[in-house]
Image (cartoon, rainbow, N blue to C red; front, side, top):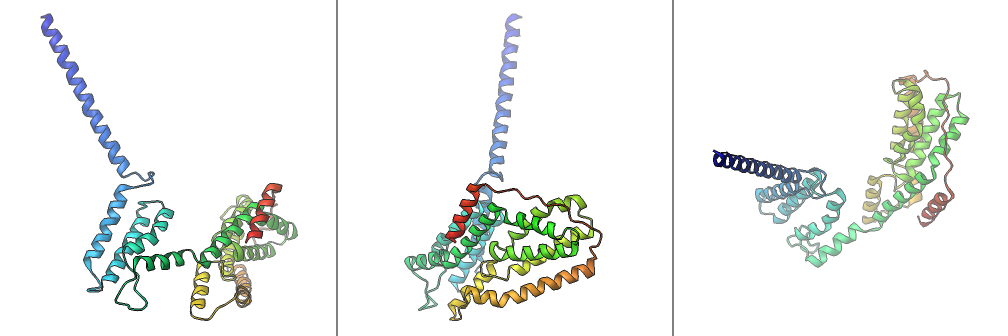
Length: 313
């Protein structure tokens, strides 16, 4: 009986260990599947595989018939867009791969013979030349100015001064903030300027609440003004840079000053008209006084770095 009991105990332990091994294998399998579909890992294998599959299907479909270059271009576009949509790689990594993929897919036609494609050496020069041209550095210069403005907290200092000046006149404060957004959008792009302006206005939004008509008018006014500000300089928005590039390519160059001379009256007039329409349509008269906007003094080191960045620009 003792032997039978010992044998029974051994069988029970063996079964338990086998069960633990089975659970461990299942857990390991779930871990592998989780890593495969993980959105936190820099390299998402399933997304990369799906992007390659979609690109291959686009190439196999041959929607452009016998035009192999166009079919390869569609496959190339499908791959890049899929990598971005499914986040197979970090966005900037996908962007850095585009010049390499453009050469590998052989999608650049020869200017001398449209039926032929460029050699890899020629394609590399063309792609990298368009990737790192003067317009690219113009954009980078705009971001440098944005960094300098943010570092100095210029928008906070100006908004605080406007609050002191127009504390009892909300309509004029609304116009002043729209003009501030217009000015900032000239230099730091019209998608960064609203972020800075809204951050500055957060005390007002917090005090009165987003349901008040004045706060609604303030937010809409800054948004519309920043859109107008995106017209004022070539560095204010990407479409301006593309327009300048195309004009230069077709022998119709436009200088920085000429662009501003043309766009300034349009943008300022449009901003004032929008201000009038907001007052008429929204009637933001439910606020009598503007709360204080506190500005923090910047450090001397920050000022020096920002001044250095502006000088470089």
